[in-house]
Length: 168
Image 1: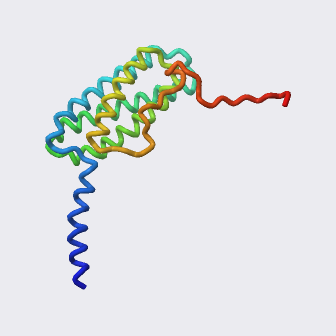
Image 2: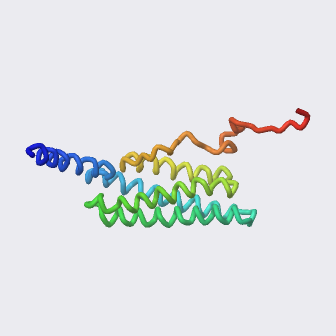
């Protein structure tokens, strides 16, 4: 019987520490505000540059532009929330998760619009700020690999190449 209150007290001490691991500390909110501003600027630039340079007009290009638009909207919303709630970093966590989701979708949609070097440069600026924000928020989903780039961007061929040889 005496073990239960001790275990409950130990658990009560550990849960707030684990729950707080996904939030920036209040002293980090100034840096978060700077990064949120950078992400918003980069998202706006990449979206507008991609729209100006779009030339296919097909379904996939339109879908990629929609995803870039969503990324710009969520970056703007996150920046406003960070500016409004600098003293309460817990309030911005849901907005940050939404920003990460839209960032991932924009990353995927960028391949559909056939970006030129200007669009890729602007998106790299957003990537750099997003990576630092993810570090500040303690965000690690395990599937994020910052070394991933589309093979076309690297100037190299895909690692796996499938060929069907009809004579065999």
